[in-house]
Length: 432
Image (cartoon, rainbow, N blue to C red; front, side):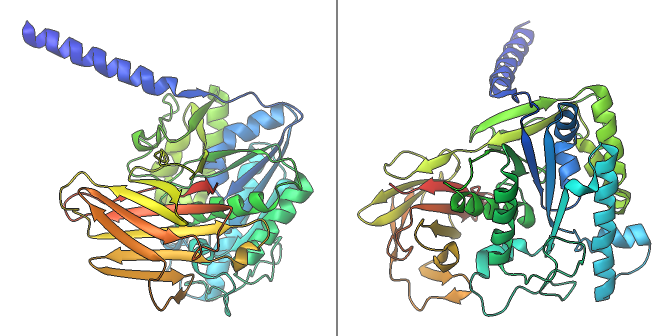
């Protein structure tokens, strides 16, 4: 009898926890005819995975919708081997992959009611845009795609045809689209997504929106998640189930749910089936997004004028003190069971082009501090110090090294010998 009572108490507590979690997810505010929706997709199929329901609802409300594809998805070699049943090695065949996925996107969006006139393909390097963003600003040579062996957009139909694979071009393209369209709502990939192109796209957009402040009315930005460990579950097509927020991302910003009626879920599923080049190898995963809702998160921008914790980060606090950015890392294991730490700090200033600002990457392990500015390794670690006290490590980064930014994009990662490493999402900061 006591055991039964204990089980009942545990189940009651668990249900309260789930209710508490659910209360943090609120319905997405209804769309209306005045909305101008802009969806940014890292690859063809991400727009359908994340926003097929939103697109249907926007068109029903007679709102405007446009989709921007950062890449043509030409790097997914395994999927194309399964799809075309042959090995793919030559450059022209990879470009063929990108053309196939572009046509699939047109077909998928036509299925949910959106014409090809509202689709904008850029064509930057699939599986290479994160490297572009972090290492190729003001580079003497553009990024070269590993598989296509190209360093510029090869697709004649694309908005960015012929442009070199340098991040300045991607920023210019996004700003041109933002200024001409003036969206009211943006849906874009999540900075905690494990896919590099998904992280890169939201980082490019952050910079473009900072640059556009005062030039256009700033839209509301909603982030969608596609790639995350053991998510979404269960796999395969379960139109009777709903998507749930991963526990580790529940508290870093406000989550919104857009609920879909059964016919909308079915239309989303069939739109995904248009991506045959992907579903033949990964349908069990892709179809798991065709559930009763779509999830989006609005992320805050943090201020570093105090010692308060950055709740977008599971492992660090940030503050400005004595002309230094302090990154305060705590670890639950005594004597700092930390084998390595890495930090990205990319500052932005209103009066300096972002391309000219330092792109600082710190690689700290043992007693060694390596400092990089983009692809250039700095000759010494002057401007960076590490202090250790108890279970706390403080990394101090000189604001002078960062060129005294107004804002910054920051990411911290901790690698541990005894427990899995902890990583933060890329977070936005205002320096005050």
